Every structure is written in structure tokens, then in C-alpha cells.
Length: 123
Image (cartoon, rainbow, N blue to C red; front, side, top):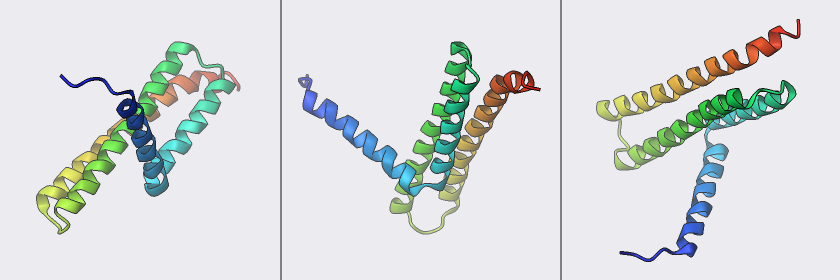
């Protein structure tokens, strides 16, 4: 059994943060997701969203990011492994994009369900 290494453990955080920064710097959709997350975060404070609703909202936003990260990583890997067009690779990329779309739609619906009553009460 390998001994636990604090150095390796904390280095893994460095690599993860670097990956997130690269994702946001290079991927247009990640920038859109980040902007939406910031708007939702600020809106949550303004509307004083209850903790349970905030947790569901947070989970849905993080889910979109997680799937976007997986989508980007697999797409980059496939581009290296098989740079030419290939029907199966195209299918995999489309399926991954579909997963991101589903997560984004779910996050939108959750956001609507959380914020609609608060916005409605303003009018």
C-alpha cells in the first residue's frame, strides 16, 4: 500500500485549478456557464433565496460545469487520438454535447422554478 503524500494531495488541487482556468480561458461555452453562475449567485443574494433552494440551484449549476469539463476533456483527447473525421468520434462528441445541453436545460428549469416566485412577487 502506498503511503499518503500531502505533497501529491495538494499538487492535485493545483492541477485541478489549472484545468478550470484553462477551460474558462479557452472554451466559449464555459465562459457562458460561468457568467450565468455569477448572475445566479448575485441574484440569490439579492432575492434571499432559502438554503434548500440555493443548494438545488448550486447543484444544478455545478452539474453543468462538471459535464462541460468532461465534454471538453474527452473532445480534446479524441482530437489527439483520431484527428481525422470519423463517424463514431462524431457520434461520441455529439452525445457529450447533448449531455451538456440536458444539464443546462435542467439548470435553467431549476433557476426558473427558484426565481420565478420571487420575481413575480416584485410585480
